[in-house]
Image 1 (cartoon, rainbow, N blue to C red):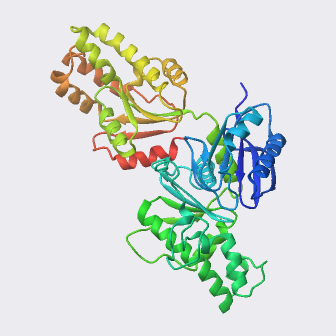
Image 2 (image 1 turned 90 degrees about the vertical axis):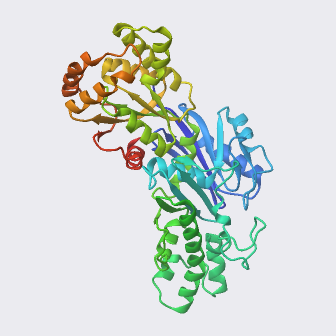
Image 3 (image 1 turned 120 degrees about the vertical axis):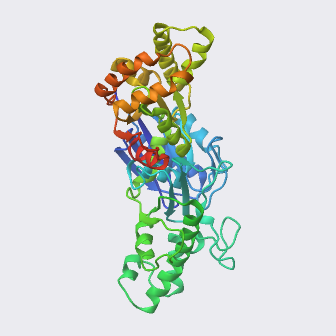
Length: 462
């Protein structure tokens, strides 16, 4: 079966860009056209661009738009230079193309692109500012876009000067009014400098005019970033958009003051492609993801799974937890029936995962070696699980045997008794990981470090 594709559209104040994107984020075709403040013109331009890049494998369209967007309702709530709130924009594109359409803020789409393929890859907590005609923003918190009541992330409207310039949002002194690309042009004009002067030109100069413009443009942005770092405690702050790299270079002249609150600030990597990549990938059905917490009985799997769940908020599905009520209801249970219930519980785990929302991440706590490898692969496929990582839980075989012996009295009837300990010790000596996805070996003779586990999983679960 051919791989699915989607079209991503990035609507900016200056340009509208579209691209046909593969599931891995690679761009297969691209087109662009000038933007417009007129919503109907923007709609017509988007349809023309879709026609240019569409292929028979395209399944959906994702659109990033400036301003507030309520994603669940697919409604544009507000906009600046390009205001699409006057149209049922997503529905109109959907009707015209016959393809399902998702819509979100343009900065959010750029952040999703960077998270999939760029500078935010492997990071769970990211703040992104997109600097162009205006300033957009988005926040990734624990791997999920922060949405608040539906449209959080309007970071260009952080107040940096209560007595400052009026903003299109209705407030005064927003960072967008002094640190956007549009604001940079205003600073140049006020300093009597040519409109074609670039940030790079000013950085190469040492005169008063250059320093004045850079200070007026970059210092408020530094203040906004410092506030975001203190508020969000991110792994990194990314600067994207057409002026993102220039802003990062200018900020180097105005370093953050030493404080309790620190995070790296870096330019985004994907440039103008971030928005179209993120928009396209957000439109494709997302595969579920699974963390396989694997190990023989009494290897410490449950403690590892709990620690990871506490650090991430992900759901844990445990083979023994699914099986336990049946052991109680059907008691007395012999070892043969126990194994039968184990196989049924194993299948039930994947059936339950198949009912979760697309894109969900689950933690599966089980000894995967008790079934042939093909059964695991069939379950992952049935559940719609794509990326997996494996946490292989291990301890000295004698320690595992002693753990099992210590808890025999508290186990439900049907589990093997003390006579199983020699068999378990022998199993622990020969057992190995399942080999599905990247693997991290966990020494369970030490207390599990949930934060460290979450960091490794987040970096490798793609």
